Picture: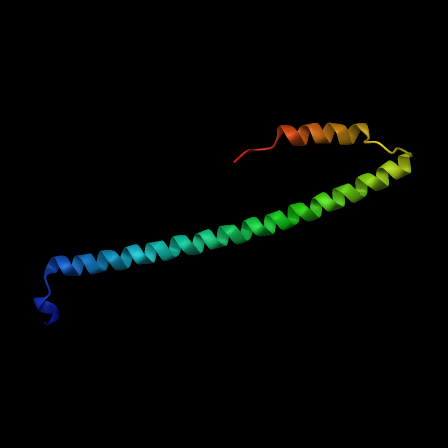
Length: 86
C-alpha cells in the first residue's frame, strides 16, 4: 500500500500520536528536571540547617547558656508559622 493509498484519517492519527508521544516525553523530562532541582534544594536546606545548629551551639557556648537564646525561640516560632503543608 503506497503512501497515497493510506486513508487520510490514518495519517492524521499517526501524526497526532507522534505529537502526543513527543509532548509526553517533554513533560517527563521537565518532571525529571524539577525533581533534580528539588533534590538540590533539599540538600542545600540540610546544609543550612546543620550550619545553623552549629552556629547556635557556638553562640550559646559563648553566651554561657545551655538553653535556647531568645533569638532562637523567636526564630523557631517564626519557622513553625511559615510551614506549608502539601
